[in-house]
Length: 93
Figure 1: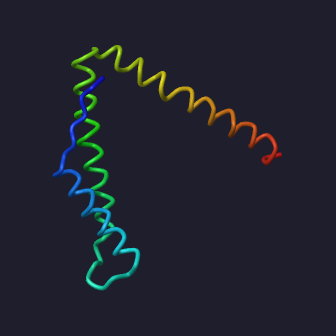
Figure 2: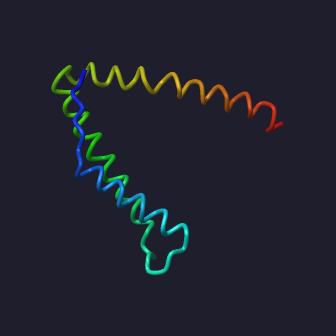
């Protein structure tokens, strides 16, 4: 299992992003750019995911990494496709 350490700096950025989005949605004056908090969340997610991907690739190898991704994503994808096909069968006729 990969060691997960708590990052206080990233947690602070998450708090800043969350507060800016909430204040923006409440219409607080002088917080017109609160939507930028969403971009901050995407940047944080990209940073964390890159670290996780690089660590797993180094630990298990590229092929094992992609096999694990495939086995994690495909069942949900197949379920969603089947559900949409059934839904479409009854609603698009």
